[in-house]
Image 1 (cartoon, rainbow, N blue to C red):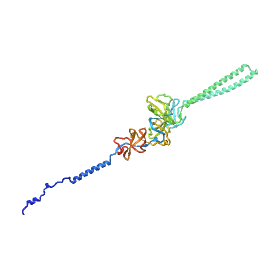
Image 2 (cartoon, rainbow, N blue to C red):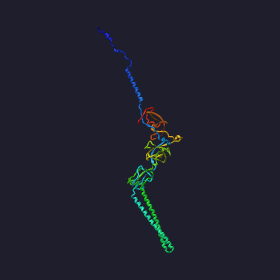
Image 3 (cartoon, rainbow, N blue to C red):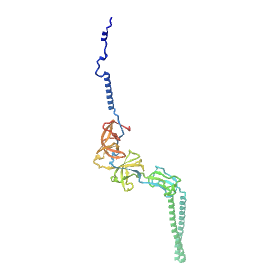
Image 4 (cartoon, one colour):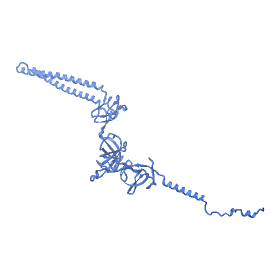
Length: 415
């Protein structure tokens, strides 16, 4: 059978003449769709899980001054110390060696209570000698009194005998002279007895001066001497002689002394309401009032001293404690509503942003920021009183930073 070349050629497929597709392949289309879906998913994730800004937050707390104290916002702040108006470093009246100390720090003492006793080995014999001299003088006085009585009886007998012309005038004169001499001796002895009694009193006082007693009711805050040490009411003997036994403070005389800049003293007046905060108890606001303004200025510091009294004393208030005082403005009482407590809270002063005549804070609610307008009162110790706008327990941004706006998510740096 003959091989037909033409028939074979007619069966060959020409690849170069196959028509080409004009669009992308299905695989390419699916790849593009996948990328777009992934980009949309990433965008939605980023939108829904926006990174929260870290900020420092603080919680608004109930203001202690809202308890009906009667004062308004603070018009002036000052620092000072708790002082005891009545205190004394108790010393002996004489120089001597301490024999016994009967007190310790913190002990309550009464006026006249014995605090310490000095050595009396020298004074006791001196007192005993004076007492013996007094006894001897009194005995001599008794003897002379008997002799005077006898001499006066003798004068009366001699006078009667002279009337009867039984004795001479000379004998009468001698009897009268003897009686007069004994009377003079009697008066001298009476004076000697008085001197001896005075000497005994002086020696008794010397003995009593060896007893160191409390000058008033108070509390011992310092024990400055020990048995065996020398004490003196004046500085003597160099560093080896004490000038005090103990320091006693009348705790009922505690008050506050602050120095107010003379440029602001016009904001202070007698009986003005104040709030005191001890450095030791920063969360404890103590009601107080101005006692008076000391009528003199310190030209070196340009300050005026102000005395402030506590409305109620407590044991936690100790002399020489540091204290900060806020002088409150007076607010008129109008009707029954004025007696109600003024609701207010305190937040850090830095949390309040002032924009012209308005003030606002950033409040954090469910992790998002909310701008809240507030009305503020007085400031003290880095805290500002907020009279309206936020409530106790609200969380605010304590130190606002740039980039904050309504609805921004935040989280607290301090947990």
